[in-house]
Length: 134
Image (cartoon, rainbow, N blue to C red; front, side, top):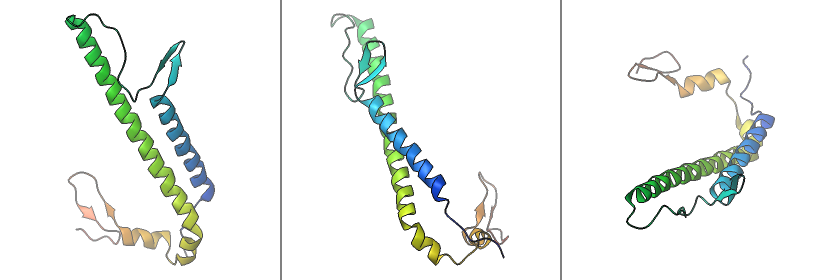
């Protein structure tokens, strides 16, 4: 008989630690962070930089481009932080419930594969776990 599906608690705890660290790093990079030397920035707020007088178009263009990069980076880091939070929260919930989940587990990994089925990527055919083409 095939092995039952088991949850590798040590592996999941290590991933939770990784995602927690990613979340912390993203927070640090978004808020006052030392990027090297005397350069610090809070990327959640607009940049403060002198690029010439109001009528100096190249300076205004430079500021607009730099602010676009800052805004894009801030958005990406915020999304990365949120995804890290979701991942470690979901894994922690799984660990918290794993004893009950494993006690209810009556199927093998192979049987689970048959239940879930397999799909191909792209425009190919879809095959279920029991070999039927959908």
